[in-house]
Length: 169
Image 1 (cartoon, one colour):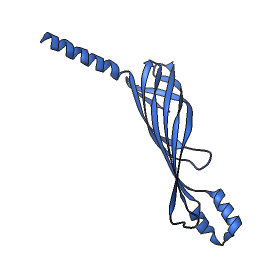
Image 2 (cartoon, one colour; image 1 turned 180 degrees about the vertical axis):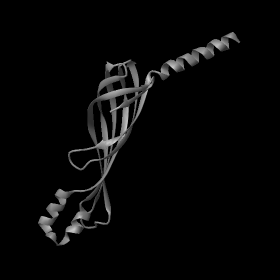
Image 3 (cartoon, one colour; image 1 turned 45 degrees about the vertical axis):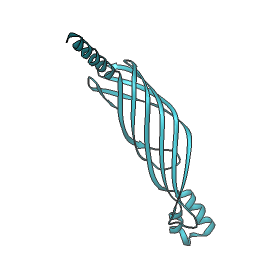
Image 4 (cartoon, helix red, strand yellow; image 1 turned 30 degrees about the vertical axis):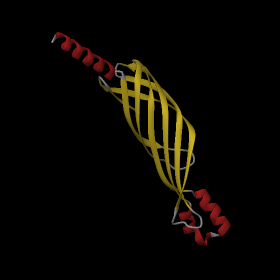
């Protein structure tokens, strides 16, 4: 009986200790790439604390945007004339999905008892899925995919809400 109690105590204490060494975040926001208008981004981030103010981990995000490529519309209007400008807008309609997977590091710098600043960086890969309209058949979507190298730098402020939760901006 005593051995079972000791084993249960060890298992519980190890699980409690490792629970305090992990971090997780759900990210929701606005993303503004240079090539198009802003759009909605959502993601998940998980990490493991190396010490109290430094953690490493990974993140997975999803960015989606429907837009009309105005540069392409202008080129089509210049080449074919303005009589088909509505059709040219349909031809220039694009649907983009960006899915980056990154390995991250974050360092916190305490400023006050419940307030700290942080700097983060990540490196990884990104999958791009682009659905665009065919010129001859503007009712049909064509699919292009690409993989690319991705990096991210960030900084912000973290306010401690509770013992194990922060609000990050």
